Length: 144
Image (cartoon, rainbow, N blue to C red):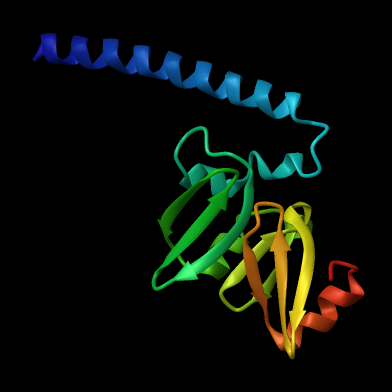
């Protein structure tokens, strides 16, 4: 039993040190990217639910009981509602453009309109539908 406790303590200390090193590397990367348009989206409460090293969040979409978090070149599925996920990012960082979509303000590159339908075009080329009831709010904010 003593040997098991000793091994537990040893591994705990080793992994804890590695975790602190990874956190310091992440904060160094965040300070390097301070010139980016949305540095706050590199370290949010949502990132606590994502794998270590997840990049800046640019969009989130609801898929059944999951939220697909879309980052720069990477995406992950997280078991939660979109409302809960939106609550874990800073309110000024983005907005809900559809009942199943949230986008970061800094990721919006433009918009396109086809008849009555409007879509927000993200810097990655992803086209996100805009709910008709929210289009006026986006127009007032100068995003479309």
